Length: 391
Ligand SMILES: *Cc1c(COP(=O)(O)O)cnc(C)c1O
Image (cartoon, rainbow, N blue to C red; front, side):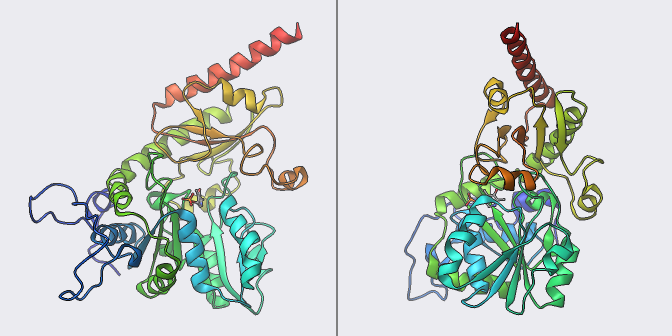
C-alpha cells in the first residue's frame, strides 16, 4: 500500500513535521491560534475541527506509525475510545468486548451504554470461540485489548479479523500496552487502532492524550462525531506529544529489553511465585505473541509469595515508584487488587487470576541492574522485619 514507508525511528523523528519556512528551525513551529482567516482559504481551521497545523502534523505521524491512511488526536485515551465506539454504534446495536479490559473502558460501557440503548456482552475468555459465542444478529463491533491488563494475555489478531469479516463487523483494538513500536494491528486486518497517548506515545508521565488510526473512510466517520463531541487536544500539548514521539522507538525498545531482563530475573526468584510476561517461553501465549508482536513490551506482572506483603513491598522500594499510571521512562509498580480491580468482588478477581500478591510492573529505561537491586533490597528488608517480629 505504502511504497515509501520509512523505518520506525525515521517516522518517529520526521513524518508529519511542520516546516519552519520563516526561520528554518529544526522543530515544528507551534501554532496556537484558535482563529484562522475565513475568506481566502479553502480549509476552515479550528482546534475543535481537529485540523490546526500541529494537529494535522501529528495525525500524519500516528497514521504512518500504524501503517494506515489517517489518524486523529484526542484530549485523552478515553475521548479516543468513546468517540470511536459511538461512531460505529447506535441504539439497538450490540458490541462484543473482551473480558479483560482497561478499567475506564469497562466503566464507559457499564455506566453509559444502557442510556444510549446500546447492548453489550463481555467474553468469558480471549479465545476466538469466546468472541464468536457472544456474536448476535445486531452485533456491530468487536473490541479487543492485547496484551491485556494486568496479566498480559494475548488476543489473536488474525482470528479477530476473520470473525469480523465473517459477520461483517468493525474490529477495534486498544493498542496502548503494545504501542505502535511493538504491534501494528492494521497489518493483521484490524479496522480501528486506538491508543492512550498518555502512555508510551507521551512516555514521560506529563501528557494526557489519545489517538486513533484507520482508513480515511473510517477516520472521517469518527471525525464527524468527534467535532460534535469536542474532545480535541490543545495545540500546546499536541506539540509536546510530537516532541515526545520522536524518541518513542528508542524508549520503547529500551523498555522491551529491560522488561525481558527483569522478567527472567523475577522468574528465577524464590520469593516470586509467578511472572506474567509474553516474552517468557513459559507464558501461555508466548507463541501467539511472537507471531503478531514486534517486541514483547515494557509491561509485566508478578506474584509475590504469601510471606511478602504487597503493600509493604511497594513501600519498601526506593527507586521504583508505586504509581497509578504506566509507560513512562521511569519504572513504576501498582497492586491491581488495591487499585484498578479494587471494586471487583474477591471471587471475580480470583476467577480472573488476580491475586492479592500480584504486582503490575511498568518497566522504565533505567539500568536493569539498578531495578533488580531495588527489588532485591525491598524483599530482603521485608524478610528481615518478618524475622524480627517473629522472634
Ligand atoms: C490509560 C489507558 C487508557 C485511557 O487513557 P487516558 O489517556 O487515561 O484517557 C485506555 N486504555 C489503556 C490500555 C490504558 O492504559
